[in-house]
Length: 214
Length: 220
Image (cartoon, rainbow over all chains, first blue to last red; front, top):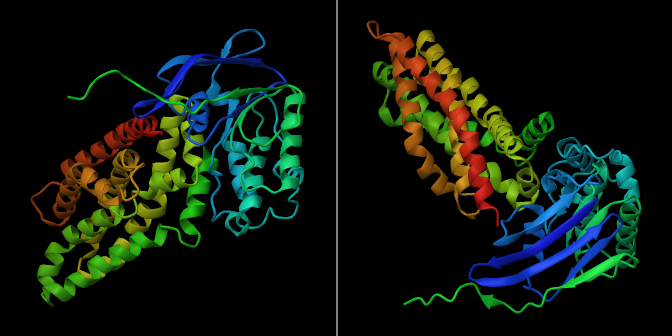
């Protein structure tokens, strides 16, 4: 499996955030996107996830047989927000995503196993809103485990996490890569992995068009 | 998709949910009418079906803007939109259905009680319940379009109501005329009722597609 971006161009409003951006990662590799605030890291990830249209260029996920796979169904996207309902219990939240984000590529962990993996055993019966910000973020990470999808798109995944949870997160990503997964993350946290490439967005924006507003 | 239906119903019925809000608003609107009109029982009975329908329409519009906005605020909407086109349309359909089950169906069930306040007879109340049962889903389904268009606006509630109201007017007209036709003798009940049903089916087919297109376009 291979994820390839070619000549991606993204912009926000009138300023071009990045242009002619390309990379290729294959099974077991991770790409870390760095850059100053406002450099377009989130925009890039949202384009990769198919939530935003790129100005030009394309992002393809190729299966082992070379056939293009739909990114929408083979990628997990973890944004700034946790995608969990405060009113519902942790267990209800996770089992909802487990059945909603069904995957063809393999079985995910059960809800209890996933909660054990992120080190929060015993919170399953609590409403999500009762948890602290760091715990909520870890439950959001557990969503990636309950249904298996090969490509992880992570936007600042370690926000609100303490040191120990940072390491726990790095372990989760390592396990995912060792199992043949791919990961693209916008993070300043060193993952401590070997197969990590990095991509730095400059944060230098150029105007989208030469048009003069008379 | 059953999981989505269950989740949305669970959220609507838990504390802070929207399920009771619509019914209470409906109750408030209809309950003050007899005090405003005065104790003219014949007049109340005559305007009863229209008042119930107007109350139900306004109550259904209330809270419609939260249909997708709540999901957008906690980030769930990204995951809902990250699906192929058909699944997204189906997801919108299920969410609208859940919205109707949580807010529209209680209005239908509360209608007989409020019919008593309006001095309505059994036939008249039955007709209003039947037309509401068919008409309120139409408002939920077409309301999804307004909710999807206004999803990025933080105070989109007013806009949703204004966008949806013109489309909801035919539902109101045929709902009320069918209700009246059930009690006034020469008027036939079935033609307006059939048109109401047709509008409901049309909106159930069109609403999810239009709302899915709006959600795709609105992602930022």
